Image (cartoon, rainbow, N blue to C red; front, side, top):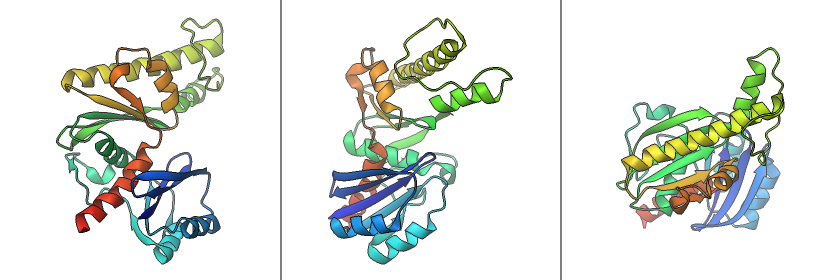
Amino acid sequence: MNNLVIDIGNSGLKLAIFHQRKLVHKILLQQIDPTQVRQLVKEYEVENSLLSSVGQDAEAIANLLKTITVYQRFSSNTALPLINEYKSPETLGSDRLAGLMGARFIYPDQPVLVIDAGTCITYDLIDDKSRYEGGSISPGIQMRLKALNHFTGKLPLVDFDPDFEGLIGRDTRESILSGVINGVVAEVEGFIQKYSQRRAHLRVILCGGDARFFDTRLKNSIFANYLSCEPDLVLIGLNEVICHQHDQKS
């Protein structure tokens, strides 16, 4: 069984081909090329497809997938093996929900904190009974840098430098990088610490575009033993939706 999953996020999109539960091909794009999608479906003999979008119009690619695959649109209404206790499930981002599915697949029967570090940084906990209570949303690194420039009269727009490790800024650029980078790392560490106090045997998964940065910064921390980095967690979770539904029918 070969599956195509498409994740359309705030700052780009990803296409991935899975053979059952194994990721065999992945592409990062700025926009979908229907011809390329047709070629992928034909080349990998794709049977099933699943599309997740957090806001962009995707009707054109959805209509295409309906004609060449067994297609479904992923949303908060999709039947999942999760107990969703979010008070407004219709407002829960599909990327967050897919991340929880990926966490459930990687660490079944364990509590997992999913930290998705992208445009925003989201924190979501799924417990050992596959129960989701809710989470947190805060600005991502780029958003913080842009906000300092946008909401002040004189602060410049500074490019993110993942190698910056200073604490005391010697000029405006360094001061901004120190504030943003040290602040966001302290935030992530604080969330992990608070959740680990609430859940014994907690696992933490980092995903999203800035996952590698946080993995590097946290690898020598006290959390290193139960922290892992899985940039493709959302894609894994989307594929797991297809696999779970297939397993239910078997």
